Length: 291
Image 1 (cartoon, rainbow, N blue to C red):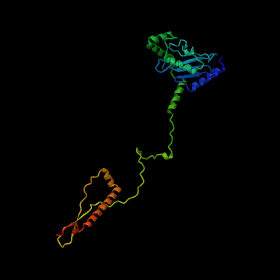
Image 2: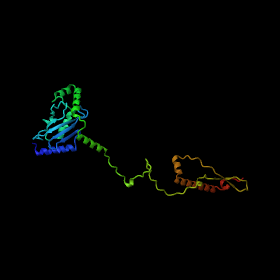
Image 3: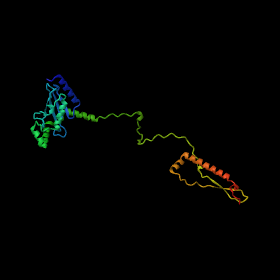
């Protein structure tokens, strides 16, 4: 008779296995006896046992958990470490057992035994000899036994329900977070890859400079006249020489400040010219002789 503490531990382990089972492992219990526990192992992919479901029975003794439970395959299997009667040859259930081990640890170890069979310590001599000498024949025989004894028409309900829950979880979509009112975009709003920056505030208004301020400066010359006739002035105007300014100079001249500067220089040049002509305004002062 198993003590009460061991029973509570088994119940906790079974509940944990049902809530979070390892991949390819399920557990079934009896309603009449809580210690009547059977594990189901799905044949690992890529092995001769793929597609099969193998039932492993547990028997808990009075010394559990100090001593390991007895485990055996209920489903027939062709494996070097499993006898014809289903006894399992694994060190975890013998000399390597620890009281901290539990049902989950045993089932995971047995599943690993299906992936990595050990032909050197064989309980089934026929399977052990084939796996060491002719692995293809061993794999063929193991697949045949799996298809006959371990492949049901439908998977066990425990695996069907788990697959259904996994598919439902994969179909769940997280709800979309609505945009804040200020971040909502109108339906007909154009989609722009580039958002232009806000236009700068208008600068202080300025009045355009009249074009006459940039007209060529007239040059005034006094022409010789017959003696006794009043002097006549000849006004000759010509366009300024072509500009050799650089690109930056042209850019400055086209700016408002450049136009104002040109106007100021033109006025200064005109004033200097008039002052120069005023000082040299008469024939006597200029040293010219009347004809």
